[in-house]
Amino acid sequence: MNLLSLIAQRLLQLVGVLVGITIVTFLLLHMAPGDPARLLAGDRASAETIAAIRTQYGLDLPLWRQFLTYFLNLLGGDIGQSLRFQKPVSELIGRFMWPTLFLTGYVVCLAVPPTVALAIASARRPGGAADQAIRVIGIAGLTIPVFWLAIMMSRFFGVSLGWFPVSGYGEGFTGHLYHLFLPAVSTSIWLVPVLTQSLRAALIEKTTADFATAARAQGASEREIFWRTILPNAVLPTLNLLGVMVAFMIGGAIIVETVYAVPGLGSLMISALLGRDYYVVQGLTLIFAAATVLVTLTVDLLTAFIDPRVRL
Image (cartoon, rainbow, N blue to C red):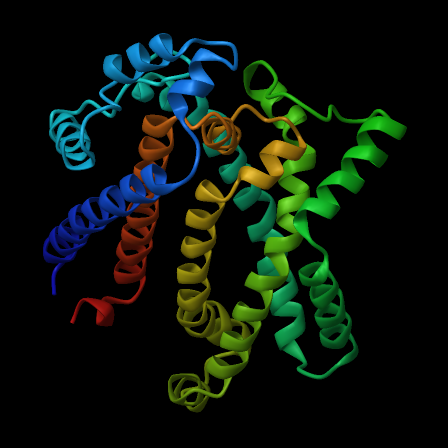
């Protein structure tokens, strides 16, 4: 299978996933208890005012007509209008997405170098002192909940010591790095052990593979074998795992963004859910689904580039 076929196949999957997500999200939101018209009008609003709001936003129409209208608007590129902010959903997503993307990239940059270093150190002598220490530290990192670690780091480094801000996004590139340092570190501490265990296992497995044995028989040095054959072959499973984690972070940044008051998509999702803002929740769900498919597509392309056998 060539790269163009792979891209076309993934894009077709993206269409199917988005249609399915659209139907499920629409039904679940409209079946959930609560009236967005009443939330929008307030507790003291009259029945006439609430009825007028329902008519204005088409909430009084049958469910199938609401979905048909929403789906046709979606095909035309209109995600909808926020009930709470009174702005197009696309405008809100465009404003809130950059902190989330910056935080995700920040986490990856902080997590990848220690992952490679720790996995190589651990796989060099399996069962040795360094391997045991790295595995124990990794298990500890996995068992600590991200929200608890984020709260503790915020209280200690932000409130007690005052080294880093505990909220906001900052201004400019350096301001973003400074304000998002604690959220990025607290997420990286959870991510590094996961990736390290994956890469360590792959490195140990590839060390005894046939191609490594053949390279040794041809007189290649251990350093040359490791960097040219073992590491490129071992990194592929971890690269796929990293893609899944990146997609998870884009859609699952709610906890960290809430703890550190980062104005990203996670904070917008919480606000929309509490306010029963139907169109914002549906729009964000579509964006998260599309991001997941696009990230996995990127990882598949990188995998096919590194290992041409994947394209066969």
